[in-house]
Length: 68
Image (cartoon, rainbow, N blue to C red; front, side, top):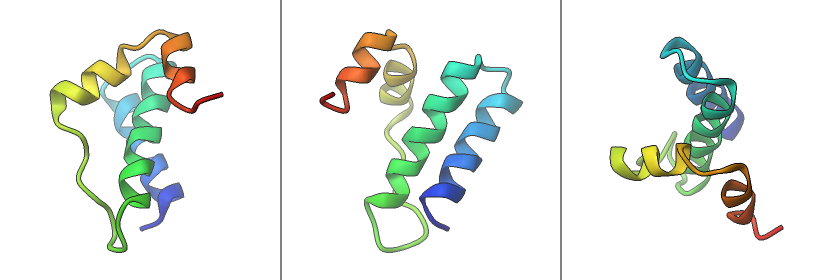
């Protein structure tokens, strides 16, 4: 599974959980990053508490993660 597949899986998980579009997209990004960090199918996701923290960031805080 590549980053695109991982993104889709994370995004769809968010949608199926009833998350907002923003949170579903962020979950897709978090899941895609896990795929980019290993040579196997996918790497470990952040712990649930860290995932929730990332999903709850403001737009400005989320954008600052990319350094742009």
